[in-house]
Every structure is written in C-alpha cells, then in structure tokens.
Length: 355
Image (cartoon, rainbow, N blue to C red):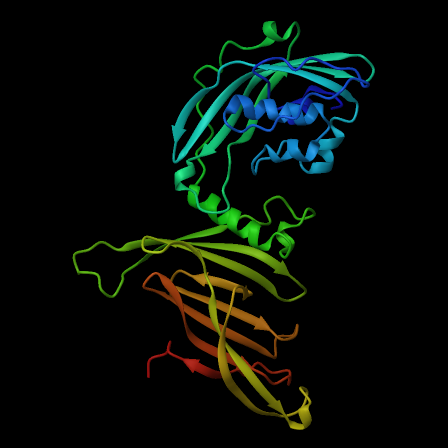
C-alpha cells in the first residue's frame, strides 16, 4: 500500500479492525486468515486481514460495485510499498433505507511502509447489506460502499473517532436495478464488450423505461399496472450492435426477455447471394436473447430491431415487438434479402397493420 498522497490512501484504505492488527516486519509470519462477513466491523477486519496478508483479490472482493480504485491493477499497485497495517474500529451505527441496511463504521489506520515510515488515517466507512430475504440469485452479501478518511496522528485509540455522527446513508440504490445488473453481469460477463475491463465505466449501465399496461382480464375500475424495461448494451461492431433486455412487472417480477424470431430459408439463383432472389421461406421460429440495433418507441409501445446483413443496409431484417399485457409479442417481421443496393423489404409476418 504505497501512500504517496492522502488521495491515494483514501481510495485504498477503506476499513478497520475491532481490535488492532499489530504491525509486522517483512519477515514476520502473516496474521491468521480471517474471512468474516457477519457484521460491518468484521467485514472491515477481513478486508485488512487480506491486505496485511497480501491477498489482494480477496480484499478487492469485499467491495461492491463501487470499487476503491479504477481497476484491480491500480488497487494492487497502491500497496506495493506497504509492509503492514494496523487498524481499529469503533462500534458501527446502522440505518435502514429502501430494502437495505447501511452501517457507518468509525476507523483508525496506521500503515507501515517498507522504508519504516508510518502514516495514520481516521474517518468512517459505509457498509451495505441488501435484505437477504428479498434477494434473488446471485446473492449479494454485505459489502463496503465508500469511505471518508483524512490524515491523522497518534496511537490508534487516539485517532479513532468516537462515532460517525448522524451522517445520512448514501442515496438508496434501486434494489430491482441491483438484481438486474447482477444478473446481466453473471450471464454475460465473458460475452459483452461493455462488461470488459477496457470498457468505459458507464458502458454497461441500464437504460430504464417506465411503462403502464392493462391485462385483458382486468376490470374497468382497476388501475393500470406498472412495468419497467431495462436495456443493456452488450456487443457492437462496424454497423450492428446487440442489446439485452430485462423486464419487471407486478405479476412476473423480474425476468430476462426472450424474443421470437423466424428462421429463414433463403434461395438465390445459382446459390449466389449477389444473384436474383428467388424465395424467402419461414421454416420455423426460435427465441433469441439479444436484439440488433434495437430501440423502444414509447409512442407506439413497440420495440424494433433492425439487423443489417451488410453495412450499406440494402439487405436486412426488421422485427417489431408490441408491448401488451406486460410483455413483448412479435407482431411484424420484414426481410430485405436481396443484395441489390436497394432498400426493398418484403413483409413476412404482419399482425401490426390493420387490414
């Protein structure tokens, strides 16, 4: 844990122990392994146990989505000149908010560097626990959210704040959004470019649309039902991009959307796609978990996918999904299968246009 500036320390030093973990020399045996998430205090104890033992992947994992450094390599680099740490925490305070419990943990820290210099810090850390009974897989355990530290001097007990005061918890996060984001990352973490380490920080953020609808069996005096559509960008190329969708409604809860898609058998003269188009036949239907170049139109309550078969767009397929009764139904499908330089689609399926 190199500490060239207080700013770096605030990014990396984010916890404390209920009892001090005494500083050790490079040759001393590491502290006994500790991995305990049973309380906010033991959570931060476990964090500093991992740091003291140079188990940085474990330390990194004690944080939630809001990490203490831009990436794991930067996090590890921050500790490269640190030989040991000593930390102490006071009693945590707690406050409930929107399905979560937030804990404020007073902390004092002493870091001993390889050159023998010692630095001190004090402040408070915030831990968060989503109500376990309300969660769906993947389960999210108690984790650290953020820290507010400043430089300090003296013994650990002298630096330790008496409490974290009446500081308000962070702005409550949307528990449904948390569930959807976790599901998206778990399912597509190794697939989507927007979830790669090189992606922009907000590349995998959800676009959320609020929807209202009525089920066919609802009585006239019943209020409209509410739903939310979550759109995630996943893959992108020269002329096509792919999106993943989740929906939350009052009946089904949260689920990923799967979309009906016709399977085509396309015939060209001489089996040459550049030749004359002879026939486009639908030979069945399948489901897909991504749409291509898709956007939701709130005016028509429709989700349209436009898949370019090549960059100029003269060959393509277009799918229209109508939102009704809390989900999306394929109502129109058009195909332009001729690579002739013209945009001239033919309608394969149409439940969207009045006769």
